[in-house]
Length: 240
Image (cartoon, rainbow, N blue to C red; front, side, top):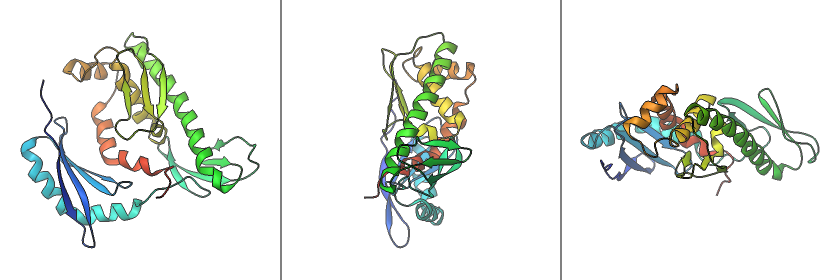
């Protein structure tokens, strides 16, 4: 079994300040990839090999102007509130505060209507999104479990930063509710990924072949997460 090299920790100079920079190896990466984590205010650069790590660090430092603009554009937490625009299934969606707190949260096209006091909007929208995520992920997990001819276990919806989904040896699965913010193809990929673990509880070549066999574009999904995944963690968070 090949051990992944430990990430390198350093900093990047952004002119008026510095930001933590992590350089890591992902042998499935086909190019150098920079990810800006707007919530933590840090930068991650991914290289396809350990030998390419110095080049990756130089690449990130030479991209400091772009990184600084990304941090400025997406800095800080974005609690759900009246007028906030956030991605829902990958599409810009606007929150509209209206009506009584007894009214259920509802979606109409590219707007989400939320009743009650403004101080409760963040919690009410987050709870609604968790229910939407559970419904969507349950349906797609059922679909892909059937595709691999296995039975899944219980599904839980969480808010973890370490992974988007997981599958235990007993077939139980856990998913991040923030997947409902991503485009449907990305949510689909994570559901399929965890269902493939019902057959192969590892990331062996056979695992990746199974994903391909059931029609999942794993590379495109991983590239999307590298470029956009970190930004999903800002939404619904309370500013410190």
